[in-house]
Image 1: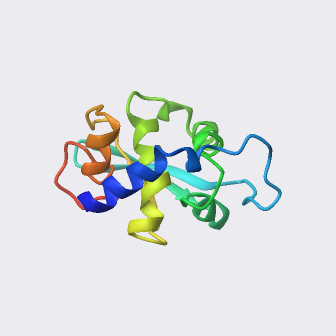
Image 2 (image 1 turned 60 degrees about the vertical axis):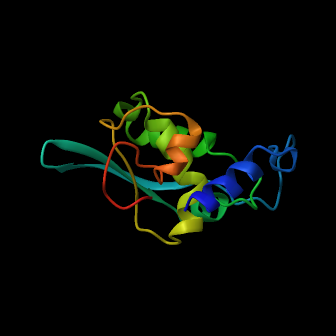
Amino acid sequence: MLTLAVTVAAVLGSAAFAPAVAADPTAPAPPYVDDVEWAKWGDLSSLRVYPTESGREAATLGSPIGPGAAWAEVLALSPDADIPGMQAQFECHWYYAELVEPGKTSWNLEPWRPEVGFDAMVSAGCNPGGTEEPF
């Protein structure tokens, strides 16, 4: 897992991964998010984000599309998701979930998780501060 994190982090930080300046006509088209829903695990809340097939395709290292447009879709569907740390969890899932667990039903974001830096987020499998499965 750490090897994947280091390798992907190196790619993300490279100039080769810089976002495209002009729109790419071959890039997957929105919408990237089909639906979101809040769920409860005991006293803990979780926002389940259900990506579309286009979102899954865009959420790969081969796509020039970054997570900004998809995060805007999440906030349009659930404005109350604009909580510190949630966007960072979403971006981590955007870049890694389809690589680690392709086709996972939802990407789960939790407002109770601690805000951490990029390296700690990736090392925790996008789920810092918890013991459940990553991604």
